[in-house]
Image (cartoon, rainbow, N blue to C red):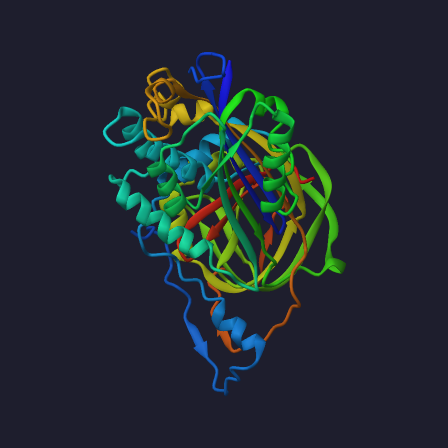
Length: 448
């Protein structure tokens, strides 16, 4: 059975790489190959800053850092219910494994498929459930317009590249309106390739992916994938960020990471004592630490359960509202941080997870994508056969030159000495804090 492939790719560097892939079946064969187919009860008041009487030198980099690194939780509509529902399902499905997923890319792909499904079809209505507070295509396009407007801003402090390409076999004719929509609102171009020359086509596609992801992903498709396909949609994200407060490599030490209450293994821990935004959540029974990247637009959050075997319970509790309340209550205090270096890749199969989340019809013979291509024989015989995402991440000490200065002293409600020792399985996420876009989420169960 032939396939239409829909693929995403994403990559981050602190380092990190991610890729996802969606296959769509071609349901019949012909020659030439035509398609067949509230505030918590026990929350304390935010810390009060005690001003020091001294002049402020606005040209001092340390002073600039102090004011730039002010956590301002996003107050607008977040539209991230699906992101965390997806994250929890993915983490549950890979119970004992290191796992990372890009909710943003999954949601973006499903939104493009919603455009292909057209209005007033059951496939379209089902796909729109990924954004439950949005009911029209215009609102979805406006949302992605704001998101892309933020993500595509250039900066010397970090690098984030977005790319998308719709590859079609030479006999496929995409609708011009659909091509214009995905170019205007989803930054996706259309390119015709001769899939019969599968090796040549695979080389073209893989070269584009390698360039978009700085060579982190250079084998997204094989010649066999192309030979069984008629359409490929590839979305890419590449993020390269450096800690705003890097860890000194000479302070990395080997310590035990407790894989469970009964087992441990020696791993390299990055260590640093500095001022970070930090919180303790009784709702999640966990500590939360924010590690901003240089530029203070993107941050990694580490969510550490208090119990050695508390990760699964934390996953069952965590949701968007709890995390956002925790962000609002975070305070900047001195924290002694011990965080393991980690690097891993994984492949997450999303078919059953998406079905559990209510996205079912696109996998069936009742799937409808009339806006995608011309010709009833083609458009009425398309269905999604497989959705997967291959992702990787590497976290290490790299960053810019460290500096420090004290202009404001803080009253610390957490006690005199705060330690954030991530010596047991934990959750992490990477977020664009200006739009609350959840780019990556995952867990570390066994640092490698």
